[in-house]
Image 1 (cartoon, helix red, strand yellow):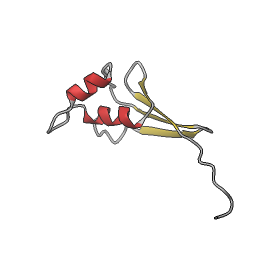
Image 2 (cartoon, rainbow, N blue to C red):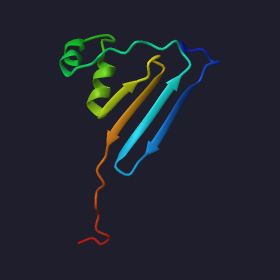
Image 3 (cartoon, one colour):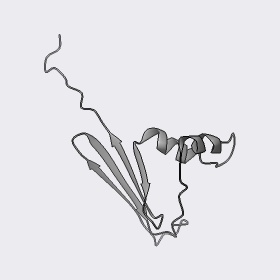
Image 4 (tube, one colour):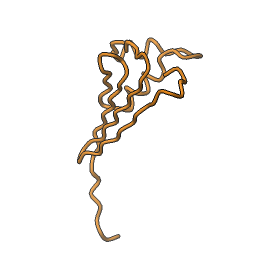
Length: 90
């Protein structure tokens, strides 16, 4: 959105029984996300500056990271395990 106050960003959160999903979209020009492999992510990390560290973190945290064709919408997907808890303390 290039900090344009007339453009908006949308963030939607979906909570499924065993997963969570985030849909983030904006009205900007979009970009061409790189085709990412683990080796490529590790190779792009730099000591300073913006060198793909954000992409690396996204792929470490989330199970799926997907962009739409125009590069204006990001879908993040994370599997979660339900923790069974006893109703009583022992």
